Image 1 (cartoon, helix red, strand yellow):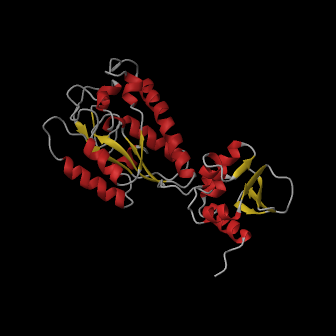
Image 2 (cartoon, helix red, strand yellow):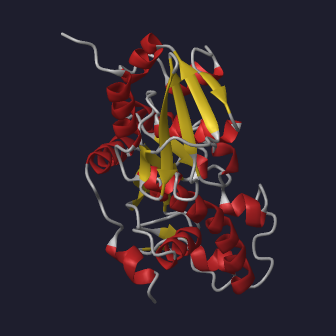
Image 3 (cartoon, helix red, strand yellow):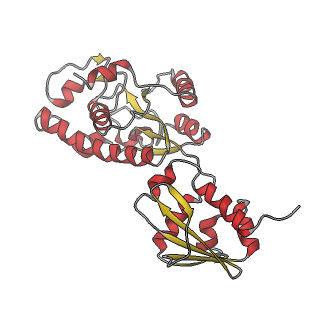
Length: 302
């Protein structure tokens, strides 16, 4: 059986670079000409708004040089492309290193998944919880272990109460409801920007996980939201999302992006049970394609 030619191998690499729609986003503004030198023969690629394509010979912004056997290993995914440039130097690269990064993401072949969750801050950092609200020494280990075993990336969302009210909520009740909500919205903007960046490049957001019944990060339920905003003294639990989740949802919708699944995991207080049932629900949601709760959809249109 004959070995594929260098042109066939480069064609296989090109197909890998163009394997999903993310290639169009990554190279939409590039217009980059790449020259491959394989044992004295030159081959040309060009990036454009559609991905990577063959190009006519001409001036090139970056040059890649490697022997035939190294090209074969790249095609077989035996040699990571970017590491061949940056670490082992089995592929010689001439050009801007930013272009090497772009090509590295196009030809990415490492173990990362393209699946992530956004997680409410205090599931990973109990220090920010209210008095007597830390049911774990540092983090909700069972929940974190479940997410790790699910092989998803975990994005820890900032704690809006910490940033807006102080670490121990010393600014609670200071300022108007509008000012507090505006401060929460600014925190939510940073998360909405990250959501947009991941979705634009084709990553799958399996969930934005809030903490029920937080007045800030609750999803299906919140408790004391009016008290936090200075609107009332009602600390009863309501079937509506917290302020931060409201603002985050509104911002994502305003951006025109599809709303990822949004759901809450109920916090457990000292001596409370029921966590295993919560974890089972998370397992089921990560395996499917849940939608945000109806109460959430209603609240952001009010």
